[in-house]
Image (cartoon, rainbow, N blue to C red; front, side, top):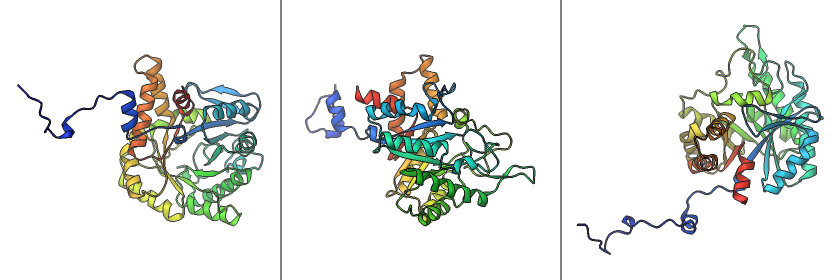
Length: 333
């Protein structure tokens, strides 16, 4: 029979994990300051359209922003990232650079309501182009090839427009080569050298973006994004992409999606420990958890918190998630 000996190594003694003790020794903690809430801003008035694949998320118009911002402030969420749904789309994304564009107007409204709220503006063209790609398309070949260099010029103008409106951070997400350098150059020349760039440096051509496409109405008419987004099979490539963006002057990095790429988050953080790292828990990740919870298959709160802990434990410093409001409410309770 086994006999307990006080000489046994301490590591063999199990602690009784009471709530107080768990809180004391917990290695990874989620708090409201870790979370960024995405908002879908629609052109028009009186709009609060539910997104069918993302229960609890909505397209909202500018006149509905006040209630949303008040809710975020009351919950203690300090940051949002904005995506625009313009009145019309064209081949060059002109609406994305207008001073009175939907995102530019939303930035000003949010800052007037809550000046301390961190406002991140997504810099991309997919929401504004009629074909749904992330860049201007050269269709002469019939292959819907994205014109990388022409797109860079528009992205730089878009970022400058968002900075003029009062954005705290601009976040290029299109995975165009040289996007950070182009935007940094444009911002600096316009007197916005203090505006940081959060680069979607590691963005995979994932199957998890489907609900987002519904949310911003940017389903592809033809072609795919495999030529400019990353192959899900590649991890070493992520480090090269991140290194390029750091060299071009990005202030922060991002990995997207999050849950399927925890190894990539970890590797990027290990390679660039001094660069703040975000992770985007994308629409498909959100939709899967919501669907499983709606069917009674999982406990939504526990699964959400576990998923966020795993993302942060992997190395993310902050997380963009559609669960931000729910989590803030749970933490406040």
